[in-house]
Amino acid sequence: MRLRRTERWAACMLVALALGNVNVLAQEARAKPDSATARVAESLGEREAHGVEAKRPAPSVVSLQALVAEALAQNPEIRAMQRSFDAMRARVPQAKALPEPMLNVGYMGNAVPLPPFDVQKGDPASGRIFSVTQEVPYPGKLSLKGRMANVESEAEWWAYEQARLNLVAEVKDAYFDLAYLHKAIETVTRNKGLLEKFARIAEAAYTVGKGAQQDALKAQVEISKLTEQLTLLDQRRQLAEARMNSLLFREQETPLGVPEEFKPRDFALSLTDLKELAVASYPVLKAQRRRIDRQQYNVQLARKEFYPDFTVGLTYINRPGMPEMYGVNVGVKLPLYFWQKQRPALAEAAASAGAERERMENITALLFFKIKDRYLAATTAGRLAKLYSTTIIPQSSLTLESAIAGYEVGKLDFLSLLDNLVTLRNYELSYYEQLSNVEKAIAALEPFVGVNLRP
Image 1: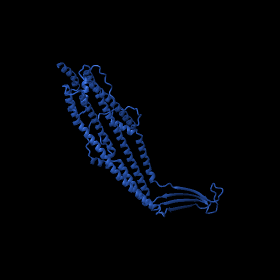
Image 2: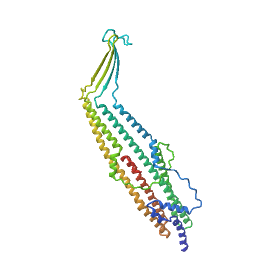
Image 3: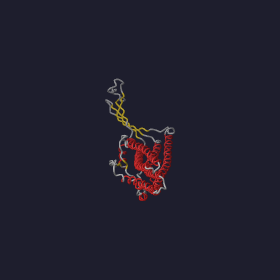
Image 4: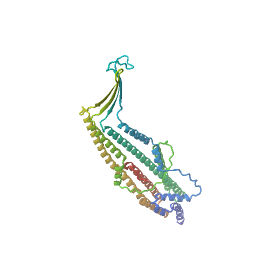
């Protein structure tokens, strides 16, 4: 009996040494929830000093700010939107300009020969004629057209701003997705190494006849599951890197590096604060306000179409052998068919203005829904992350500690100990996933409120 107890004690000491410092880890779980399995792996690693491979060089760390700056500089969609705004700005002076003047050249005289305008000498009705005519719109029409073109260019500018914010949000979403995947791969890899050490403990106990074969087999099954999980996580990581490279307009296989360590951060803005920011700064709303202004100017212009436009002309007549003649003419375009043209045009402009105002109401209603959706996603993920860090992971660490104590005295089998370790690992992965979800939801809010919510 004493020999059996001694052998059990020897086997348990391997696990106890491997899982030492769990009491300390439970206290540190709030600050670093994956510290439990990390310390376990470190503890085992320190006791396997012989044969340890040299550490590989740490991969380069890439910052979110650098990626955002590169995306804004290189993404072709953003450059295209900039050029569209430049094109709209170039329309403003065109809209305010007068119509091109008309130059007329003619003569009255003999039909042949035509050149050089052979005139009938001595005939006062015969001569060479040069005239210039300028159309002059009714006062106020050109200024209204200029204002319409100006607000159209402003609407295009806010469309560019919206595209820029959308791109930044996409980069942030891809970045935090990639950050989570790197952290998940790191956690699973660490747990896989730990399970491999547990598997050797179980195999050693089985070899000396003091352990069950199912313990060793169960450990191998869990290792295989982690290998499968690592494979899937690596696939997701490669897709996330390809997505990021496409946003940066890079080759798909361009290496990205490792995202910076992300930690929980407070989000102090309320739903009311976000709605107020959105009403004041949402680029789509600002663009829609410019479209409403354009339609209001269009209504004013349609009213002015009831008034006539003018033409002013200057004529010079050259008569050989006779005094030269000069003429000035003024024309008025009479809107005689206003019931078919001007009146329907005014109704069309008024209807268009009403449609834009209705679209404004619809955009605002959808905006508030989207803000609440992202806000709830951010706050829910934040509460879950806090729950994992302050309650679930510390409790899981204490449960693992209790399982170790039970295994040491023979009250708990190896499989239960293994299940507790797997449970702790899953909670760690869920914690980092929720941290990522918080940042992704806040990033998704930024295009709607029009400001950067994270420093």
